[in-house]
Length: 192
Image (cartoon, rainbow, N blue to C red):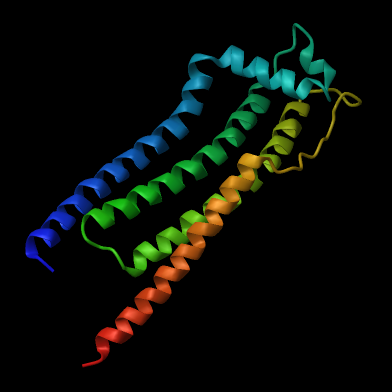
């Protein structure tokens, strides 16, 4: 192979890998920070939307003078940040993967494990949302008097969730293929 071609490929890998890393990290910051900023700057509207969504099962939440306690609101906000944190963490790992690629660390065990974990996070994240919805409903019911409380279990998978799960399965499968290819390559390099 021509040395100019190799140098060009390495340079392109460095630029594209660094760009993808910055893009993944920026997306992770927006993913997590966007939720926080909504609660900081649009608290009344976000709170109203939550109360309306849970008010179907707990009509007292829709009363004009109802205000949830700080405990209930804190639990709802904290629970909302769990999936955002997991998603931001997956994007952080993705950025780290691309940063390592930009440094020429292609077939390393660390990159293979990182892809595996990103895949597992992609598989698990859609399954977290229904649990979060259930727990947020319980958080809102803390303040309600007996007889007004409601417990509803959220179950279901949207087409977006199926897409995320499939993406996670593909990433896990690719990491397994990378691991096996690395094993074969390492074994091949041992032969003289």
